[in-house]
Length: 118
Image (tube, rainbow, N blue to C red; front, side, top):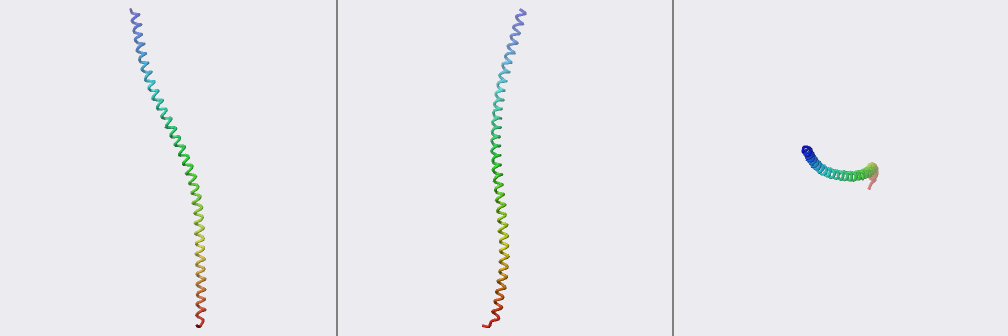
């Protein structure tokens, strides 16, 4: 009887251990499922962020190109404005000179007219 009680106790211990292992296996499978789900979500987020990064990089490139074009256009307009300002100053100087010559001519005409007897 002592041998059969020991065998029975061993079987009960094995059954208890098997039950615990089975419960641990269920917990492990549940945890693995959660980890897989979290990993999949992380991969999706990384892919979304990568796509957004590519989009933003492309937009920055286009904006940089536009900025260069606008800078070149601004330089050209500045050069045109400088040339127009120089021309305007030159015209103003010529206008002043012509007024001076016209004034001198009128004065000369008036002086010669005063010398005439009507």
